Length: 251
Image (cartoon, rainbow, N blue to C red; front, side, top):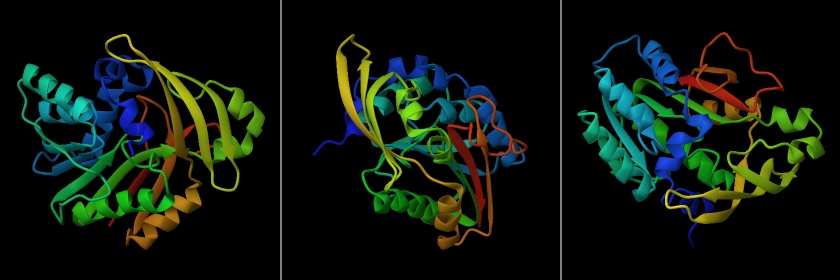
């Protein structure tokens, strides 16, 4: 059965790159560089790399990077972009739940819900964190963004569902307080002008859940911050007004 996130990213690459939530690439890449101490010997894995916006920018800055994604359509666009920019990125089609890497990378990034939180079950989402952790070297670092459950919990669920918070034109939201999952329909137009309606199922996480999951995987340092597109930084406390959270975990 084809899942909603697989349907979404078919013929969606050019449109995706024009979305407002993808316009912070330069600053976000700069933040990742800071977390690497600008050490270009470090190897990077970009999980759910999509059209390669972070991977290509990092490669342009001299870093060795591998990008994986489940979408053949997104990766095809990413490879063409890398070719046009004359940079080398190792793009691979792969399922983030079952990566073949072991102790290979200094840092793993999953930005803008790159795989994590999109899966149909909590176990599948956890397997993504587990797989990313396995790919890291002994002193490796994991950086990712995910949906912040404090937002819908603090605001009334009615207001949350009525607000236009999901990319594109979403409607018929149903936030489940028992599972912290938001079920909604998303109306989009693909790169060829075809209109599609996607039934989405996304998991929101509390900071305590994320901390527990990462401690289970053996991380010794876990920091969680508020997240804004194009404004990643360590001095922004997470609040109930943040739709996403920025997570930085070190082994």
